[in-house]
Image (cartoon, rainbow, N blue to C red; front, side, top):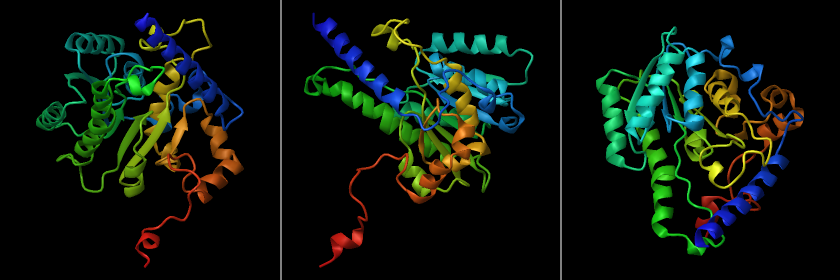
Length: 304
């Protein structure tokens, strides 16, 4: 009964999330699958000559993202995950699928929730003379959704922080401070549904382009545990996968530091006058913040 109650809570939370997502559309066109504007075969989105590192890249959306960057011509794609057997199988599948391309696929075991593992990963890349130009932070620890937050296990919550906050932070630090990074070289950081907005505020797009996006409603391995496949019209994995390639291009630079949804049509966004006006005038538009408090300054607290 306890297990059933837990799944029921996850299911209800899932439905609530779905109801919110379907109402959050800033474009008339609501995509469920990839489309020409974000196609990785589009010349302007080419990743030729770039090494791409994808955390959680051995399965699900991470694996699809690896496929999309391969289609875009990335020179090297490094997929990182915790399970060696799964990683090796994924890399073998990618090599077979893209055997006629020049893309090199590298599988590397690593735990994003462990500092030593992260350091070992970047030391390995440096020893192989690999400079990572694009980092896709896809790995995440998803805690069980329960009916009562206060009934959650503290260890479970802290594991989530270790991966989703601490791990992604350290991955970003290592990425930005690569010894092989040429002076003035722009980097591209893609964050799948977690937040790097503060870093984007501190670093201009010319230094590190940061795009944060929600991958949409995907029938993943985790979702399959709490929902039936015929429940809704699930989005195709190709949508967020190809969106990652678009987000790593100069075409997405104007969304630096913003949180967007993959189902929004990128061409409509660029021509939506109201949207562009809010982007220009509202600093907190599409950012996570405490709403309702404006014009807060350090000076106000120091004023005697």
